[in-house]
Image (cartoon, rainbow, N blue to C red; front, side):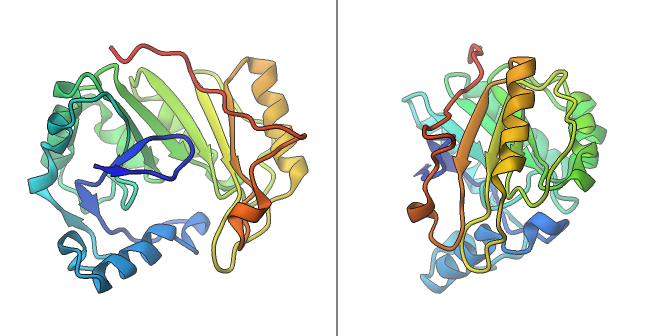
Length: 238
């Protein structure tokens, strides 16, 4: 378990590391930069750098963490990547079911595969499923998310690269918005964020503003309209 600096979670668990770019939001992938640093430091799980690698020896790690945690699954990869075998994904879900005292958050850009294999996965109530939507071109991922039987479904609109227009938030329990950070960060406009916040308010969907981003993420902060927005869904861990 690694403590996380990501504002909407507490810890990370990476049974898979490495990925490949699939859409515009991947251009400045933070996980790719971090994997290169960890490989240079000799971290054994990153011996392959950012080449997709499954780590069976990590599958039972959450069972060893006795204190309940909110755990982001595969912060350094995408569990629904085409190269991750179905039986390995099922093993990850089995661990999450057995570790019922934790809350697990999964985020994917590969929503088509997620929807395709959702019927052969066991979805315990403590699994929250989310999709990334960085621009209007990828709003179809929200429809795929609605096809899953996850107890909590959420959107990560980060890095937000364009206005999204009207969002269908039926069946969506949480919306996270954030700008891109790090080298080459692309700007996010306030009006895009406020439009999303307005739609969340109209549908009573919890709204979480993560960051403005930019090259200096800390300096730009996470205040919107003079305050922080840290709403989260009310759901039993089960």
